[in-house]
Length: 187
Ligand SMILES: [Zn+2]
Image (cartoon, rainbow, N blue to C red; front, top):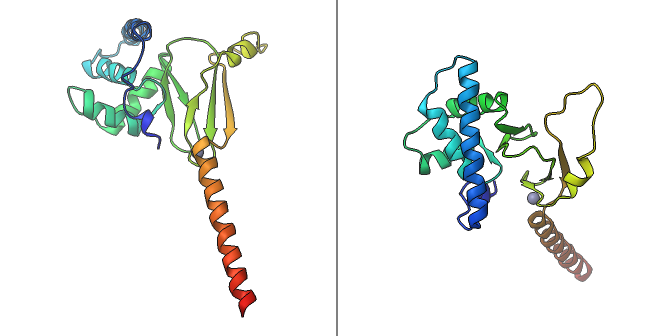
């Protein structure tokens, strides 16, 4: 798994931090409203999980969130609690769930803009594409008789690291074949 998904990124501009805390504050409000609507108990755990998920600064797995909770939360929670809370957040519209073939990945829904992601078929790393291209392309896409909630594009392929790794392995293999050939020729 990509380490960047696990630990918070400390270097962010002041505006980005302000935007993020503003988004988190409004998400807290939405969570409160949702729980009141559904007559659920407003447990401090749920708010704390939302706060810590905000520290992930992007896409995270239950595994990754578990680690962040260990580092940053005032208490420990079980994997089942995190999983159930993410389901609750999804229903409340606070979280985007990426149902991938590997583990489910989550992301706080801080805005409703269309988003694009790359998914590496080798190491399964999912990365948000930092571009407005997806937004421009999908802004005007409307499907009739369908109530669209998220516009997400997944671009499948090979990440940079895996490309480099494969090239290196191909070179090694070529070298081995050459050495074997030389040995055979000498016989
Ligand atoms: Zn990869």
